[in-house]
Length: 553
Ligand code: TNX
Image (tube, rainbow, N blue to C red; front, side):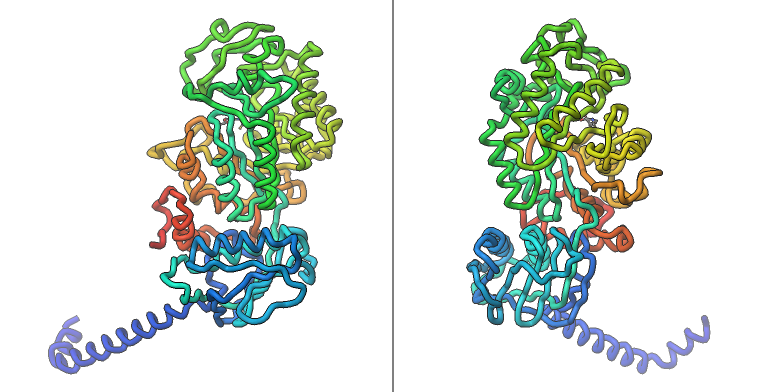
């Protein structure tokens, strides 16, 4: 220590001048670095794309996107995808790019979206994205793949709204080959506990679609509200849709509005999966048609609330119940021994199937605590036949494993591994929605202003740090159809509330469903997520700024 001290003392002058040169070198490096920044980005491999692509090979150059660029599509039916890209470009830059169909490869400076000549392994939803100094090309086998490639391009555009049409935007060069790990990449929105408008549902579709999700499951009925017009049983929506949790005005979708949602989702390669929750979670129907009431069971032991309603207040078997605005679960049931009940179920499934082009109908099947077990099993067996007769594939929450389901059914795991295993053993495919990981209605921590916490507090890393293929012992990768994050709406009633719970957790869940598990770690992901903040801000997404991530300014 004293040797160093006397050295410093004796060589003070040299040391100061040495310090100056260091400062000079550092400053020059800094200046050089900031000059380079203006030209960046040149490394495709360090871009913060979510979900992480399967393969990225950078070539270290830059494509300049200018106002002279056009978006060319390989055939007229792809115009919608080209126009979508143009609209998204416009949100982030000052560019308004024109989309045109073309039968041959366009010249330099343009973007080209074309079907065919993509690697077979990318399947229907994958794509190959090639960025050179001259051009951006997306190749895919199906339009859905081109759309997914477009989502990747959107994330590569610098999030700076430029001042003039003369500005250009640098996009790093290289090749991305990308395709999903799981076929089912979804989210569920509960429009029953609180009703959300068609506009809100469309924005929800936009938001999940940025992250390459392809399923929106709509929870259309529950004790508190019936949200879809059924022409043969009009009171379901007219009376059963009148209110919601907390006593607000509720609402429902007409069949025309529902078709509009379905078409909007289809334009973004998202399939709508409608759910009518049976034979429990059915009070809104029992209030509308008393003959369906199989006898409610209230209060519920170990429920959420100290119960304010009793069986007496709500109404007895075979009589209409009162509408319900609380949040207890599992206390209502359909009447089993009645032909009307199965006429009702068949009419509802038939009308729903007619307005749903997708292959699935979800029959709920969860928490039927007021239904006798032997009736429950018979109910699910009947629903299986009814859904099949209407040409659809049946999905139910994991409890349906207790019935005679087979390889035609899909079971959605949310709580009990034993049910999920039982369903898989019977040949059913499994959707993974483990409540401790992806119940996105759970609070982040005890201070979160919205959300429940019966399953867990779920911080952004908890929602990310798991692998569907190892989540439930005995259920292998091949038996898993995919991943879905349910947003139950007991505590939320506005789009802002929705965004607060979805972001920033949903993008990570979308990544679990899309990207190979081998390439994923929280340490690496959290950097990409932090860099993604400007993307969310540009879209007016009010995300929860978790302290576990460094958010880019
Ligand atoms: C459990 S998950 C439910 C829902 C509630 C949710 C609240 C499932 C199949 N049933 O009825 O809304 O918890 O987190």
